[in-house]
Image 1 (tube, rainbow, N blue to C red):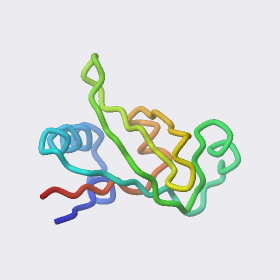
Image 2: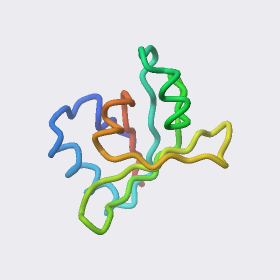
Image 3: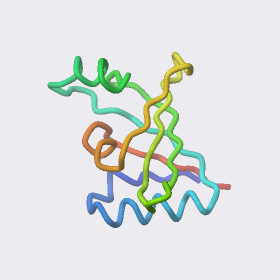
Image 4: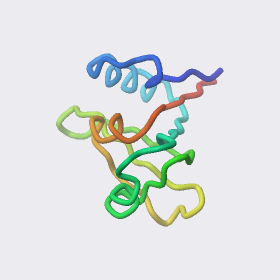
Length: 100
């Protein structure tokens, strides 16, 4: 079973709550970046994110209770980027999860 969170959940607090719930459920996550962004060069330089790609995603809750999402490029798994929920929502179009 798979479901998309971000594409349908635009409210910030609900997005974080849904991610926390699925972390507790042991879900597996992936993310998709926007296909055309004006700041693609900035994303590539600052975040190691290329637009129009799928990424491995590993959400977690930090010590302050905030949702953070580690993004891993499947073409180069030696690089990962740790994003706040806000940074993720700004630069990605979906967070997909699958549970057993």
